[in-house]
Image 1 (cartoon, rainbow, N blue to C red):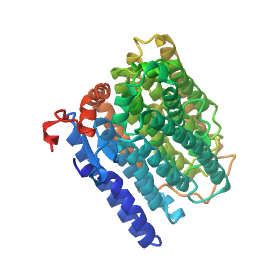
Image 2: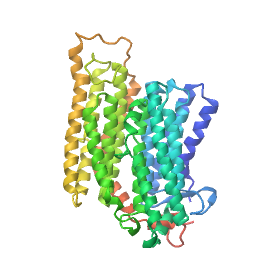
Image 3: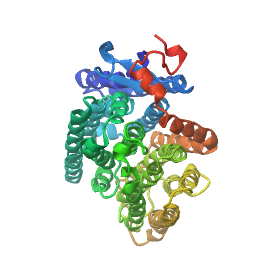
Amino acid sequence: MTHWIILPIVLPALLAPFMVLTARHHIGIQRVFSLAGIVGLIALSIGLVWQVSDGSVIYYRLSDWAAPFGIVIVGDRLSTLMVLLTSVLALFVLLYAIGSKWDERGRHFHALFQFQLMGILGAFLTGDLFNLFVFFEVLLIASYGLMIHAGGNARLRAGVQYVLFNLIGSTLFLFALGSIYAETGTLNMADLAQRVTLIGAEETVGIRIAAVLLLLVFAIKAALVPLHFWLPSSYAEAPAPVAALFAIMTKVGAYAIIRVYTMIFPPELEVTSGMHDLWLLPAALVSLAIGMIGVLAARKLDRLVAFSIIGSMGMVMVAISLFTPSSIGAALYYIVHSTLAGAILFLITDLVRTGRGTLDLTAQPPMMGTHMTAGMFFAGAIAMAGLPPLSGFLGKLMVLDAAYSDDLVVWVWAIVLSSSLISVVGFARAGSIVFWKALGTQATVEPATDLSRPSALAYAAIGGLFALLVAHTVFAGTVHSYTTEIAEELFDHESYFSLVLDTPGKLSNPKEAH
C-alpha cells in the first residue's frame, strides 16, 4: 500500500478551504497557492505514471480497511494517465485565467478551481462505484460555481440547465447503485466484477437494468446524443478558462464507460450480452455527425466550439464502443488530443471576445492582436477537424483502422470522413468571417474603442497547450504504444483484482508485496 496515490485528491481538498478561510480577499496569495498546488499535482502525477509504467497497480486503503469493506483508491496506467492529463491541462488553464484576469471577477475562483480538480481526480482514482458517485457530485457542485463565475443572466440560466440535467443523471446513478448493491452486496469495482460472473442466467433482470442505468449516466457525462442537450449552452456561456477545464469533464464519462464496461460488464459477459453493440456505436456515430453539423450551423464562435466538443466525444465513443484493445488504445490517444484541442479553442474564443467585443459570426472591424489570434485559431481548427499534420489526423486514422474488422465499418468510415469534411467547412467559414472579412469592414464600421489587447501570459498559456499538442503528434508512436498497452491491461484484470482484494499469492508486482 502506498500513500502517494491519495495525495492528488488530498492536496486540492486542503488548498481550497485554506484559500477560502485565509486568503479570500487576497488574489495574489490565492494565485501563488493555486499555482503551487497544481505544480505539485503535476509532479505527483509524473511520479505515479512512472511508478505504474511497468504495468503494476498501486492502491491506498483509507483507515486500512480491507476491500471490499473500506474505501480504496487505485492507480493503474489508465487512471494515472488521466490524472496527469488533468493536472497539465489545469496548469495552462490557470495561467490563462490569471493572464486574462478572469480570476479577479469573482472572489472564490481559485477555491472552486481546486474543488473541481479534487472531484475530477477522485473520479479517476476511485476503486468504488459509490465513491465515483461522490466525486461526480463534488465536481458537479464546483463546476456550477465556476460556470456562474462573474454572473450574468445568460450564464445563470445555462448553469441552472446544466445542474438540473446532471441532477437527473445523479438520480439515475443512485438508482443504479441501489440495484447493484441489492443484487451483489458490494460496490467495490474489483469485488463487483467477480460477483457479477456468479449471477445465474435466470436472475439477470436487476443487474441488466443497473448496467443500462449506469451507461445512461455515463453517456450524460460524456454528452452522447441524445443526452447532450446540456452541453452547448453550458460550455458556450461558461467563462473561457472554465470551459477549457470542462474539456476534461466529458472525458470523465468516457473514462467511466471504459472502466466499468471492460471490468465489471465486459463484452463477453453473458449477463449483459448485446448491450455494448446494440445502441452505443450508433449513438456515437450520430453524436459525431450532429456535433460537426452544429459546427457548420453555429452563429456564434463559442457555440461552434461547444458543438465541436460534442463531435469529438462522438469520435471518442465510436472507438470505445468497438470494445477491442486496438480501439480502446485509439480512443485513449484521441482523448488526449481532443482535450488539448478543445481547451485551445475555448481559450482562443476568449481572445476573440477580448479583442473583438462580440462572438457573433458576422463581419466586424479587425480585432486587437488579429494576426496572432488568427494564426492560433487556424492551427486549433486544423487540430479539431483532424487534418494533417497534427495529432487529430493520426487519431482518426487509428480509430478507422480499429474499426476495419467491425460489421459497421462502412458506416464508421463514411460518417467519420464526411463529418471531418463538414467540420473543415464549418471552421473555415467561421475563420473567414472573423478574421478575413474583418479587413473589408474598416471603412464602413467603426471599431469599438473600449477593447484591449490580450495579455502576453494569455498567449503563452495557449502556446503551452499547442506545444503539448505538437509533442503528442511527434511522439504519436510512443504514446499509441503506451495507450495500446493500457487497453490490453484493461481486458486482463487478474493483477488488479488480486491486489485490490488482497488475494494471497497473486500480487501484480513483487515490489508491492507487504
